[in-house]
Amino acid sequence: MILGIESSCDDTSASVFENDLMLSNCIAGQEIHRMYGGVVPELASRAHQQNIVPVVNAALQKAGITAADLNAVAFTRGPGLIGSLLVGSSFAKGLSLALNIPLIEVNHMQAHVMAHFIRQKSGRNSQPTFPFICLTVSGGHTQIVRVTDYLNMEVLGETLDDAAGEAFDKSAKIIGLPYPGGPLIDKLARDGHPSAFHFPHPKVPGLNFSFSGLKTAVLYFMNEQLKKDPEFTVKNRADICASIQKTIVDILLSKLIEASEQTGIKEIALAGGVSANSGLRDSLRKEAAKRGWNAHIPIPEFCTDNAAMIALTGYYKMERGQFSTQQVSSSARYPINPL
Figure 1 (cartoon, rainbow, N blue to C red):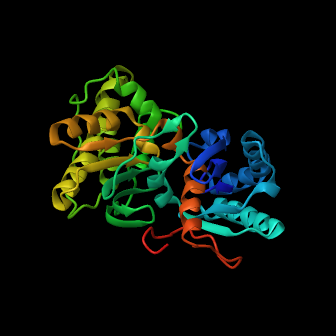
Figure 2 (figure 1 turned 30 degrees about the vertical axis):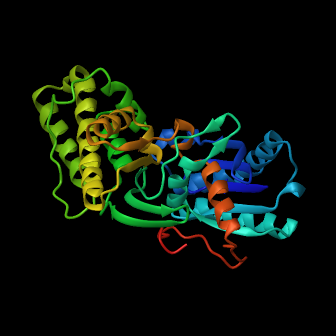
Figure 3 (figure 1 turned 90 degrees about the vertical axis):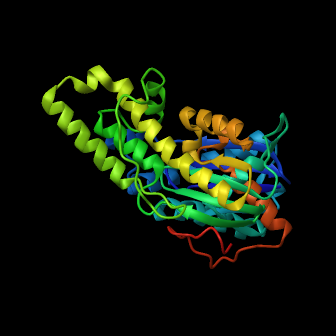
């Protein structure tokens, strides 16, 4: 029995697994950040302190066990917001000491990839076979990862500045949408024309990404159009959203295609919060049909931050005896490779 704890950003989550089978997965979000148009780190860490005990208790109850039944506790060590990470790691350390059970540190980005292997009583996800390439896209990270084993991953490319999820949210803010804007762009884009407006694609070497220039381009574009017509946003919101979404998706898929061609791997997976975006999911399916890929997309519950992916990764690390000590410290920047 393994308890997983996730607290890297603004979702407090706890999950209980019996080996690789999920028994529960509970998540508490933080609505307060909507007032500020983005996650406020200090407020996030305070909310984690309020939420973590009730969330862990709910996960244990839903799983039908008590804390005394646990054999290990896994937690997100990083990357993420340091204040938020400290709440989860401190709780995990305390529980580990109190119950005299092993402590297991987990890399948040590695866990997103592992979400594909979560097994539920109702059945499994579509699980990729090794080796496969995973495009991991979230609000804070964008990576292309070659996965050769549950715990063996190599980053082939990553963003040099901003993440794709941040580009969605900041672009949404520019056009007057509330936080979090990414899902709203996705919703509005369904009624828009993706080729209505053109935004530049950055020229970045290799398999790396850059999204800071896109945000600037959206800002300049909107300022210029609003000078000509103050009602431009209202009249064209769906087309603007569709065009922004198409640009981001095209940038992501162009690098994914390049990675597949370079490695010869046709097992392709998505992971991370932005993998819930319908435009990205649909485009990946179309490319897969065209290129003979086996595409794997997690169900929405396991796209965003959750403790199920932490507990499952903890299970595989426990199998290999990869435990942590009480001296382990949270890390805002935590590379995926040396785990």
